[in-house]
Length: 115
Length: 112
Image 1 (cartoon, rainbow over the protein chains, first blue to last red):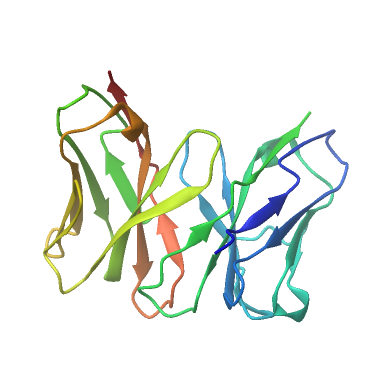
Image 2 (tube, rainbow over the protein chains, first blue to last red):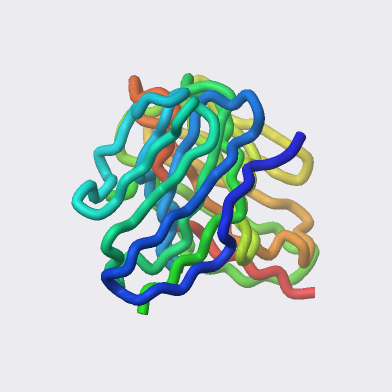
């Protein structure tokens, strides 16, 4: 099966600019996650979708971050305006359902550098 | 705060040796999972152990879980240079669906 696709692979922007990341999960996977991974740390969950509804977005900085999953398939994560501390790798993952015991499948991420 | 914390943060061994990584967590869980991340790539699922299991094997991997101590260990036997990667434990909080919280990881280097 095809894996989780993410684009772009790298992005460099200046602070206060906006940026968007795209994710296409594994076909048929109902649950989609966005994680932020700062260099040297483990991934931190930003938002979890079940189909096109939000399950949890408690750690999403909603003043600058937004995410959507129209039609319950692809998803977009946006940052506007970006800050220096947003420099990180943004990982998208999907799983076949939202119940526990379902492993996550990750994309290779988008590395964001904010200057 | 992160639910799981790995120990050690970094580990360097020779090819052929065994590598042991530990994970501690804070709250009750349904299961604990281990993932591997090669440099510049996404995480890859290695193994899942349920809260009612004590030990699980997969190839050269052995995972143990002690829910009374809220800890788990990952043992990689007969390590290879290709095992060089970061290893993360992830836990799902009870009644929180499949919302995983990752630890800070152990960076393993296997020297040929």
